[in-house]
Image (cartoon, rainbow, N blue to C red; front, side):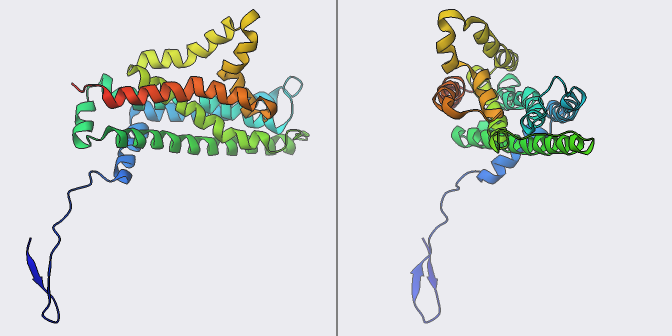
Length: 261
């Protein structure tokens, strides 16, 4: 420690620089964002999701006798299209480094895995927010087009579908992260992400039907998206805890403890 002379002849002890606090979180977030969107697979998935979101708006426009002409219908189609492919980017964010053996570099540069994981989750949620905004704009554009050609687009559900769109997309992104974090294998995580909810719908019949309503992520997401959550809030929370919170927590714990080789 050195002595420093200041004005007035007084001296004080200079405080040595504190140890480095590691990579700033903002920089980690930028890195994880780049890993998510600036890869070939990421760009293809984002582009495909955007194109699909636009394409599916032709369904309520083209089949007015078969599809309810409501705001919920017009908003749900681009939201569903967005949530179909985009969660794969979340899977890749949690699995690619393990399958490509680049995880050693990542955790050498930032050994505190919790910060890296938080950056990955934040990047995925940011992408989900932007995707939700895009789906919302596409949905309202299709509503404007429908009304422009003389359709009467009703809004019996009020603001429910509008408020449910963003949580719907974000929860689907978190679902992808959960499966990716648990399995650390891209192919297995993607397959289970899409297959398990379908399998549950198949087996949740008969005696399991009543229990199935509490554990059915597909039905819970439908309530959220069409603005009819209402009295089903407890069932929704239960299914989200089982299908998203639990595997995500276990996956993050596994990622934090897994040996890097």
